[in-house]
Image 1 (spheres, rainbow, N blue to C red):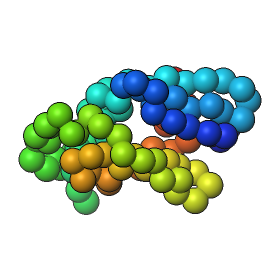
Image 2 (image 1 turned 90 degrees about the vertical axis):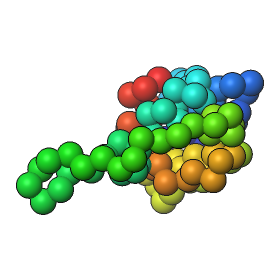
Image 3 (image 1 turned 45 degrees about the horizontal axis):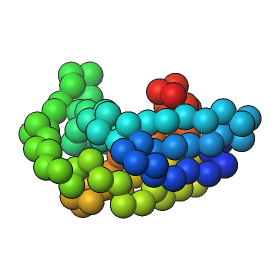
Length: 97
């Protein structure tokens, strides 16, 4: 499944999928669940989860400026506080909504 279109509506990101399904993602929840290594951690060579510093959120952290398509597999939110490292695969995003 792939998104056909997306837009911010109030405090949600609305995604229309190619099967007609509509998903509504609250912006704050989407940002707090950011899948990037800085926000969610990443495993080291031994499989231990390595976490960076805990994110510090400000009001701009939950304001979505744009969404960039990444190849044919993901969307990348660009947040007003400059954070744009999280890449949401279509599968992962669809599972959330």
